[in-house]
Image 1: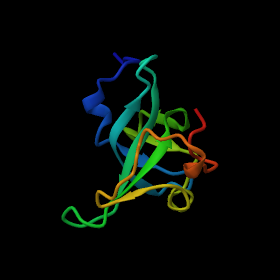
Image 2 (image 1 turned 180 degrees about the vertical axis):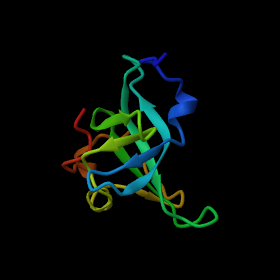
Image 3 (image 1 turned 180 degrees about the horizontal axis):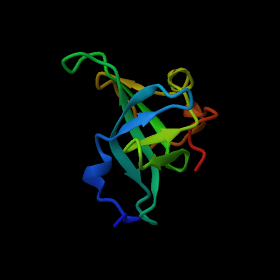
Image 4 (image 1 turned 60 degrees about the horizontal axis):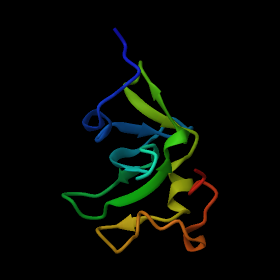
Length: 111
């Protein structure tokens, strides 16, 4: 039986593919609204070798759709679009909860 609910540990590490069909990374964590409990966005991890050179990109949760056949999430974004937005590289300081205009981007903070 296919369930509509999924535990968070199954979402973390799930693959994400862009609209061009290329893998853009894996979900590292979900960011939740404290007051509503709703998922605001997923932090998608891309790249890196042996833990270095990894980028982390915020992807609006509403843009991710689960593809049952592929067993992965798909989005209308591409890796290039994510690269043009805010990101974190190798643990640089990045406030994942800051929704100020400094981080405005067409694919960012649309929720």
